[in-house]
Length: 345
Image (tube, rainbow, N blue to C red):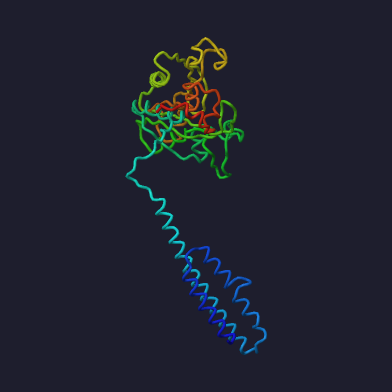
């Protein structure tokens, strides 16, 4: 039998066997047997060098055609066998959706999310709406329009995460949302701005990422008395009707006058303990009347309108409500910790 006839016969033999292959392992064995480095086609072509040049070219072209044909049939058969194997796997693992399912234990609500929702609903019940804004914020909204000039300490690199040199930062508070609300809405305005904020802090009571809810009310004849009344309703709804509340003078660039709000320590009842550092009081939020400079920056007439703003940390309130002594526990996702709050909303 001539070399040409051997190659043609080998091709027909390989194609027939490949088409009869019943699984992927036998198909792989046939690939090695006919096309491998020590396969039958290679062995035949070892004698190619002994042929005359004109015959060598013809036999070489024939060998390439036979090789391509075998590879084509191998690929087609491989696809067929893979589809068959997948179909068999799906048939074996078929799920009868009419059968009753196994018991799935209910999850627990995270204390931060539960606290945030409850706070938001309290203010919504008093007529506030929810406003949102970007977490990567322009400096003009995060600082400039809030009466915080470029040389203010709050803009120091130690406190703020700067995204780039083009004036973008990770917002340090949700006050920019209030600015955007005043730029796009006309008074009367009553909004709360819940969301994540970022500062360079990391210790048992501070986190580089935490949640805030800030509130804003703007209208004619809004007074500090209105602010105190709304915050009293809020704090009593969270900590109970018997909670003690006090306002202390303070300073914020975007409010004047400004105040810190304290509540009676929820741990010792006001008698003094390690949590309240023996004072019987816990700082809970900051607030004040909107500074006229802020109104002018957003195009609201400070001679006609007044307003108040307040801001509070959601994690701090959650820690006080559930007596959590380390803020890092709220973000470690330890299931032993999370499961303790099963049953809360």
